[in-house]
Image 1 (tube, helix red, strand yellow):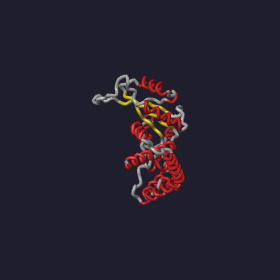
Image 2 (cartoon, one colour):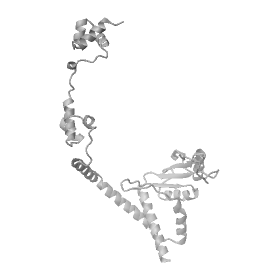
Image 3 (spheres, helix red, strand yellow):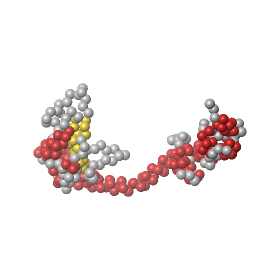
Image 4 (cartoon, helix red, strand yellow):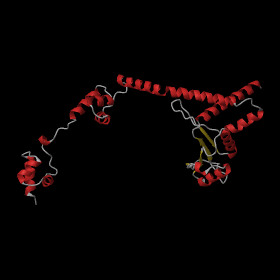
Length: 283
């Protein structure tokens, strides 16, 4: 059964194109009641208000097509940068456009100007620490060379790229007999065992918690500097020999704030290998 009042309200809306206020006055009902009766009936076009920013949006699109950046559009139209971006994000600039190339060149100049002094100071400090480490090597005898050959297999340093400098000291090994001298080296450089962080890297088939306790007791590591272990997935097809009660994984030592010490050891290692080459040449 249809509601005559609803039918009349819809007729007034569709045929006579009346507004909600006019329908309320014609039928003698409130606005909420009229809105419920007209639910689903679109309003006539003449009742729609124009969006105050439609003209600005169209102008933003026109400026973007002309190669303007989001910052330039926002500044010229007097709107927020986020608003300008929402209007023109579907119109990316041509990466080969001359204006885009100029912006990239200007950005590079600003970045170089901001960081050039810092980079020069860093490189000078690095060269000084490397020279300091090289000066500490002195003359090598046969025992030094043998010791170097044994211990160099346990040292790893983080990878470094020209665009991403990662100068810090890291030591990874599974032999406590090799890690202990490294900790003594840190102590000689004034770095207590409570400064580095320690992390066990071990296969999931082993007991990680027991391995952490073993390393702590063996090397006297502080419990509050132990980080969560790295668990390596075990592949069934891989034949592994590092299993059993004697397997405790690898201990990863990271020394925070060790950039200068890293550079010093770089210089020391470089001088050691240079001395090794000189020894082999003289023989």
